[in-house]
Structure formats: structure tokens, C-alpha cells
Length: 277
Image (cartoon, rainbow, N blue to C red; front, side):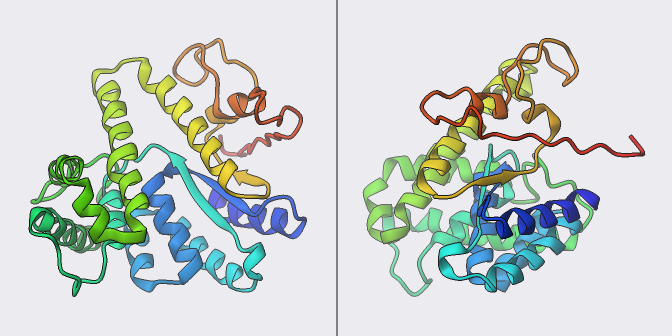
């Protein structure tokens, strides 16, 4: 709970000082997309889904952050990005459903099976997650209708029928493509490393977050704030087992030492230390 409260206070403080208007979060792209849409639109349906994907503490501060964002002029509104891998699968289905056109728009026959499956899966997951409030949703394959299996078929269909999806999705095609192609393939690669216990799991994830930050940094003006686990924030190369794996370069160190970013003296790391730990 203290993490969530401090996170919100830091955002408001840094924003008031003109230091940061962009928030990067240790969660996947699809989750970040949904949270950002909620912060910009106030969509209550999105908030219900986010509630199912989040802890109660962060759900509460998201509503406060939305209220704060509403007080800001458009040029100063907060932007939210999940730069981690989509390790949790449920936000992927929800983000894809959110990007689909109104149900009254005709669907090409070639993709109708999978478009209908996305809508059904997202609604079903919302229902089951809401029904089982204490379920550990992280990395679950799904309930009766398996989310991973369904999305594997959606991915294959998308790769086969891109032109139909482009026509059907219109302006939302690029966002849909990023989730079901780029992010989904990255997730599958990481899951392969993770399930086999390979050291590549850690290096791959850290580099992924760094690469996602590069994209977000280039697309959004202004400073950034993120509250991450300590192993992602060290600015020195770690050469012992303090983070459960050995030598690695963290997200913060990669950003600091990227010559193209010119942020060598612009990255600040602050540790949070707990009396009880």
C-alpha cells in the first residue's frame, strides 16, 4: 500500500515541478495501453477491467490519478506506458477487444471467427476474474476458455490475413498489430526462456524494457518517472547474486549509458527502504 501511495505522490510532485509528465510502469504494454486510455477518457468499463488486473492499492490510485489528470490542460496531461513484457495474458485480450470497431461494422468473413473470439474471450475473462477476486491472474493460461490458446490462433490468423484486419480496424490497425504481433511474439520468446529456467530470461527482459523505453521516449516529450523493483534501477553493472542472477546491466544503466540518448547525467535513482525489511 505504501508503494502505491508514494507512487502517486511522486507523480504529482514531479509533475508540479515540471520534471516529469510521462509515467513508465513495470507492467506490460497492453496493461499500460488500457491504463493510459482510462486516464485520458475515464472509461468506466476499462476501469472495471483494470481493477481485475491490478492490486486494490493501485486500482485506488489510478482513480485518483485520473481525477488529477482531469485538472490539467491537454498539453500537460499525464501519459502512462507499460514498458515491461506482457507477462500477464488477460490485458492482451482486453486491449485487442478495445481496439475492435463497433459491433455494427461488418466483419470480413475471413477474420470473423477470430474477431468474434476476441470479443467473447475478453468478456468471459472479465466475468471470471471478477467472480474470483483473489485468483492469481499472473501467467495463468486462462479459465475454461484458454486465453493463451485462443490468442495463438488469433495471432496466426492475423499474420495470414493482415490486409483484412487493416481494412476492418482502420486507424486502430497499428496499435492492434503491435499488440498481437510485436508484443505477443516477445512474450512467447520470454515464456520459452522462463519455462526452461534459462538465464536468457533475465537478460532478454531487461533489454526488452530498455528498447520499449527508447520507443516511448522518442514519441513523448517531457521527463519520465518510474517506480521499479531495485534490480531494474541500479546504475552500476551488478556482479553478484543480490538480484538472484549474476552479472547483468539494468534498465537504468542501459538508459544512462546510451550515447544516442545523451542522458548520462539525467537519470536519478532513489531507493525506497522499509523499516520492516
